[in-house]
Length: 304
Image 1 (spheres, rainbow, N blue to C red):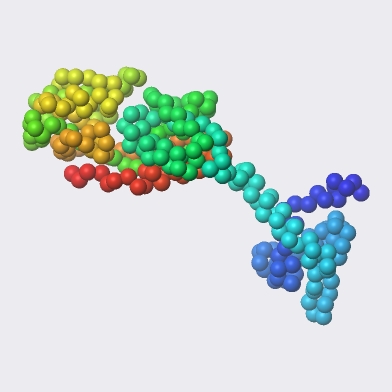
Image 2 (image 1 turned 45 degrees about the horizontal axis):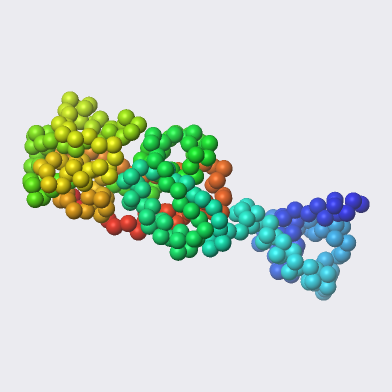
């Protein structure tokens, strides 16, 4: 017999051997494995032929393992554990990792989540370099072409090969400088005020502007900036209004007062996206889990 064929054993057969060794009974092993006694007996016969040893012999009304079975048991158990571990990928030790993780995010998402992630990496995985790139309009192609490893977006693309997890929820509110004005009392005062508008580099506007436009209303923009980071400098010391995500109150807009929008606008969620080929990658899985943990520990949204 070809020696390679002789040891062409599968994990299921080795698991049967361990179950019989642990239970000391074919019938008990069958119950534990959820199979018939004949299936266990057939597998043992195949193992006996492959390994050249009886493995288990009769002892009174039961069976007892041979010396070979007792000596081989620990090695088989370790082998089965290692084979099962293949599904989880190679071992990953954060402190020893050496790689770069690229995350696509806009400035609001970046400042809200990634500084805390960077601190985790510096503490637990100093060999992992965090690279942050602008997200633009999120498309599956960016993940497919490895232009980034992870992407944060409120608009997960409809693609079967792109996986996602919800990170957090947020809502749009109105920010203003309380030394210069009061909060808008109603919709009429909101529309009569002048605003700082956002038009991203991609040409995309805030979703709330589309909601207003669908109702025939337009905000009077005194200033237009390309990202959220541009809001504080233009808002400070002016009577302008800035409509932005509420969680910015804990970050770049912490010095300003906040009020609810004077019209209905749904909350939104941020999602973490990655390509399915990286789903079981142990390094990326660890980074994803750290980012999900960071999101779970963020302060609550400012009250209405």
